[in-house]
Image (cartoon, rainbow, N blue to C red):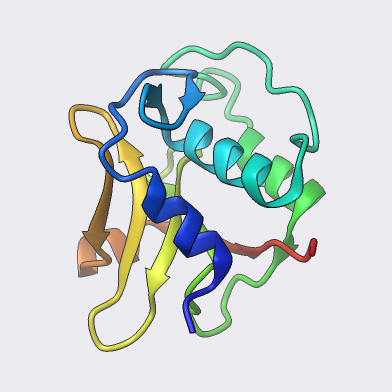
Amino acid sequence: MTPPIVEVARDWIGTPYLHQASVRGVGCDCLGLLRGVWRTLYGAEPELVPAYTADWSEPQGQEALYQAGLRHMDDVTGTPLAAGQVLLFRMRNGAVAKHIGILSNAGSVPAFIHSYSGHGVVESLLSAPWRRRIAAQFEISKG
């Protein structure tokens, strides 16, 4: 059975990439995808997201997305991957973790849904390079 979070995220596939946006079919970034999926499943977002730049939290070295994940989801980092988990990625060694995806398949061909600059919302293979970038795994316990 496909988790509802995955079904809703798949409805966003094809949405163009648009920094700070969160409107299905119009535009979103990776955080905007999660925000939109959250609204569909649970109603209002759990907190207001302040405006952010492309390098947000990097100059300060703050793990803003990780901290937000801890506030609103269950940290299941280190457990087996499971469809429906929210994955947080560190795009470079030593950099803050600031890319988000939703694991759509944890089976023999793992995949995740994310919004990626230049691509929009896509379902990508969770290849070895992506897997190495996982900084945290979360599960939404609401509902």
